Image 1 (cartoon, rainbow, N blue to C red):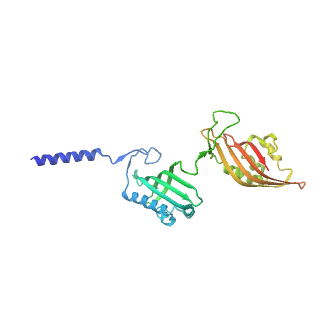
Image 2 (cartoon, rainbow, N blue to C red):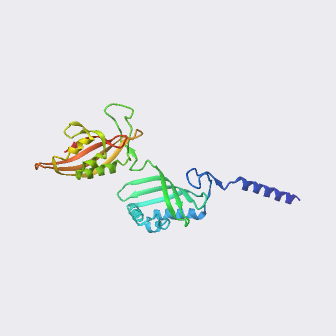
Image 3 (cartoon, rainbow, N blue to C red):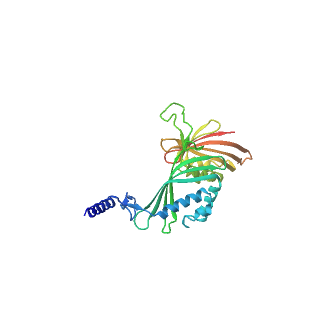
Length: 300
């Protein structure tokens, strides 16, 4: 009788443990048919897929790595880029320390992975990263989309911010570092230079504010309206502006206005036969609307 009582008690405890341990949790709050649904744990196979992927990545084996991605994701161009990326490394290691496979209704499969990654570039650069990554899998268990978030270790040679702003007078931004700006300024400058070389003033106007200022290399400051560009190329037979570098920067933790440092050389041939050749460094200031509102020019 005593044994039967003990067995019933153990069965009751086991049942309570099973009931109290949920196999689902969290929630997807985005759009789609799975909105509002909880997650459940995925399969052991999805964990193994991530581990094998990390192994192939660490071995710099692009062919093996591509086996774990869908054909749609790992097209020929992306495979070529992955191969170039891996071959640019002296060594690269991805060491996952936390892997969580998830499912969320229907056929949705996702693996969340936290990894330590070290990259030793052949050019001598070094990176040490702590990564959180999301791998969404298709029905065949292959990666069909990928996102990455990173924390950058202080030992890295390259950082996302640096330098220091001083200003002509001390203000609330004095002492702040610079960051790279990313409002498409680089492409805007490239398009601007292409239109300039084609002497296409209408194309150039697309980059300009309605009114803008030029501080040229002679120290002359001139205010222009966009319509003034119509007359700019009248003295010239041809122009040729070649870019060396484009560096878009802004002060950290400020509004979106930015300055773009542009290095290059420029040649102008006038209709009267005179030639003009300069090596230039220019700063193009972009306003909050993403238009060039002023320019500073230095030459030698």
